[in-house]
Image 1 (cartoon, rainbow, N blue to C red):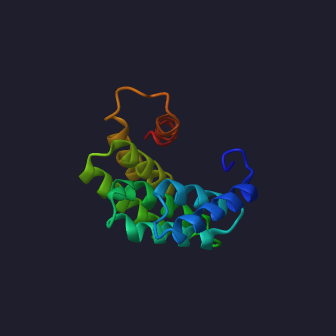
Image 2 (cartoon, rainbow, N blue to C red):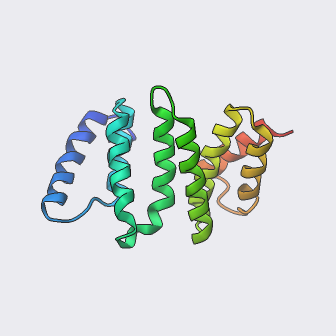
Length: 163
């Protein structure tokens, strides 16, 4: 529903499921929380989206879902950029932490996503060389799956940033 822009409906159903999960004494899964945060963000409810992601991040180390931490940090960074005004400093911190954790885990896809987000932010703030170096390093690691959206986006940004 979120991907097809039925955000209000998605929020309603995801909140209902969230309440049932919490009532059972369980925590929201990172996937569920991410979907709800995206729906909130798409309807301009950035504070709610950030609150959900922050809450889930606090619990990921206590559960087996700690491998989702880089993805959640990258999402948190994206949400900081959706604020009015955008909080570029917090977004950059979130992206850098996501990259660091993904590297420690050897999780290349989350590293790519966070690096792509950070490279966009750096380029926007006229740090094109740093953005290019950061993104080209992780992009060069991939030898297959080059038709995925993140890799297509990375390739396009690298072409735009090329010195």
